[in-house]
Length: 319
Image 1: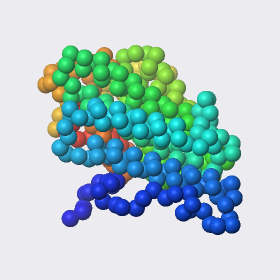
Image 2 (image 1 turned 30 degrees about the vertical axis):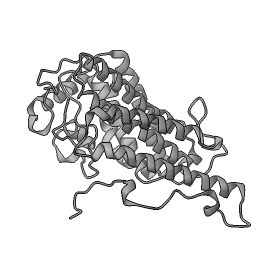
Image 3 (image 1 turned 180 degrees about the vertical axis):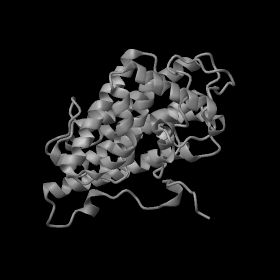
């Protein structure tokens, strides 16, 4: 009966409290290193509780859209409070790098935090399409910009890591976060008509690809595997300085979006009108809240760009 049930964290389905520091430290062995490791684990537990609240917005089938904006603001505030309460050695510097005295797992924790911020932006962007006032285009532009920034923050952070950071403890699901951030930037680079935004996305993607390719080849960092399998080829193709190639790719995406209406890729917006938003070139972003399909690969379709968005698992909720 549980087949197909998405992974979820629901406070009504567990009664295990967030551990306290005294529970995790052994008497007589309260070294500074052990204390920092315990505080890192406690921060991860608290972040997981926040994620559980956000996932209710992702998986709930009966959502009151009138309450979503308020809940999003509350969750954004709670996430900011979580970050502000972190010990100094778990925070990042002003230029995005981690503390050299941090503990193993702190980089994974930071990546998880940035990924949750990106998830909140995806929820907010989806909800912007349900607005009924005249400010819908402006709201979508704003939320899309925030989503693009959130994906870029993950890229900047990962590119700031050194070799010893890759040898730390990392949560396995980090691999999907890296691919999701890249796909968002790829989509923005292709869809936007603003050359400045497009070049900014391409620059981040080049740096991201170079960093993860080096991490894989030199350090055998297996968390880069999914990113390289799904995104490396598209990044190389889209960042080649060839306008005609970029136009061909865009045309392929547009053809895909107009011929796969049943899969949720039509160019019709939520009001039933032709979408003429300036950040789209005829193709719509698919449902940004769907769970990534870990089995989808480039080999499933003849043209690799066609299922690039499978990482976002297209459903019938589009805008």
